[in-house]
Image (tube, rainbow, N blue to C red):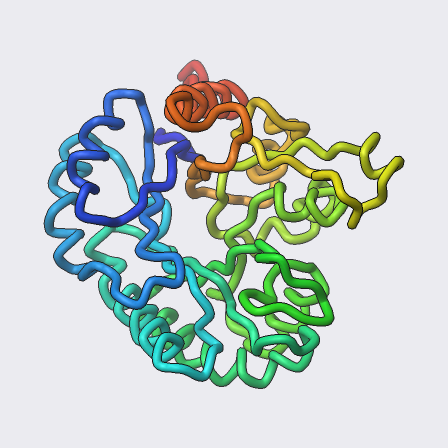
Length: 297
């Protein structure tokens, strides 16, 4: 039996990707989430990238947890149109990566309340999700606020469970779901565990990131005061109980990847970045446990 949940890391798709993955493969990552851009207008050709890296990963038995692109696909602009077309390309070439998950931001109509983005959300994403369904591909929306609130913002509506209800009502298809991480909920002072219990079956991919909520600072200065109230942490250094998270994922039937989202930890950064990521890799593997077959009779 294969491990039901893989532990890996996020990898930025750029001109260094082949050298980068070759250097980090020996550390024991089981999967990679490939990130094609963060609001970049020109992203690398996903078909050519697959041709470069998949023989390497296939030889090592490493899976792709998701292929991802980030930006605002609801934006009425040349940049928004390029991103929408790029999502169609990712859906079309997901099979080249042996993955069934395409992920990114849901987008947002700038500076209007979340419900007012729903008609545009449906207009943009329904045809993409329908095409994805034909290809047996799932669409997973990342749950970061990107600095937005319910009232206004410029990037993403998929940060709040009430928004998820509206999104899944607008597009009632089984292949639309979440790319979830507890950090973005903790940063809103939402308890991630009850949310995971409720929404587990809609979670298609996880970003492995944690947080320290500074409740003493919140009590003294308030949520919107002058001090940082939440630090994003690499798993193993934050407040989450990942044994419980992984247990709840299994209860919901999740079989996929937790890919570590690095580059945010205030301590394990710079020269300590991969040190922190490898610690998180081994920590999450321990929380997941190693499969041991039952005796046979």
